Length: 433
Image 1 (cartoon, rainbow, N blue to C red):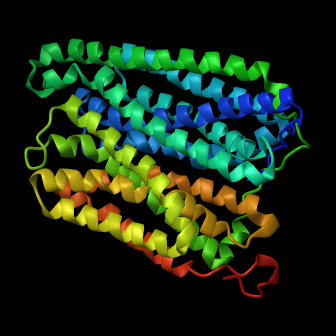
Image 2 (image 1 turned 120 degrees about the vertical axis):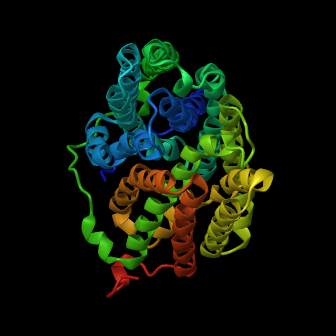
């Protein structure tokens, strides 16, 4: 992963401090936006599954199309941001994401599932560029002493986006289809119904495109204050670092964590609709997604305090064991216990991603940017693990498919225990650990 150009330092004058605070607020808004857009996939899955009468495995191609972009785009995006600077890189990411949202319009007009998947890939490519630019930028907008608080604030707003947007999306996108079962319509009426319901998706994402375009114009006006272009950047992956067991294990843990989190979120609506769990209608089930992601938001604030008192590796292991246990409880029970146990996994998920990330990078020194790039590419787990979960759900049941994320959490717990001790610095380790 390329280390992008440094942001312009904050001024010490009163006007400069006020200006820097405004830039922080502006960049933090990006975390809210991409968190909210990503969580809308959990609403799209039941919507498109019903419209196109898809199997679980085919419906999971929504997540496959979206998260594959992280593996394909992250390295060239780093080089792009390194050449253009943060400001222009963010504008590029917003523009690509807006283009992806606009592609939902022809996809809806033609009611073509393949076009929806293409639109999702383009949208995710834009979000990947945003993440590559915004994550280091938020740390550089101000003094190093307060960088941790800025990053914590940004992550909290990311979680706020994942909490709010599924509820809004459920009301906008799922409300009408929840009243009609397309499988019971006469064959001649299906195309018209599909076009009508697809139009709802097209309008929603067109609105998102307008919002992204407006925000892009704001960032374009501020582009010079966010850092100019840096020296020509190379597209480096740093694969040789995988010889270091701690980082390699961390890459696997990120892959499995994102895969488990996305698999559960993708199955939740259909799972909560089943008579054997909560028996909700589609819109009500979609609104409950906000509780899954809201638990992650609350857990981050709790976890921030806990991580100051206990070993991060042990906290990670405990959270992963809790998440895996809740998956198994949900799979083995029915009714409210099954439904609420799975929703509670969100609380356990809260500290996992940042803790795995920091533990895996510990001790890398100047190789940290390359290690970070490998961890970002591992987010592709959100593309592959849900498809496998969909295959299991098709062949058995959604409840049985929950064994897959439980297995993922077991590996994550093992990584937490493995990384409970401080890492040996890379430069002084004859054999990396």
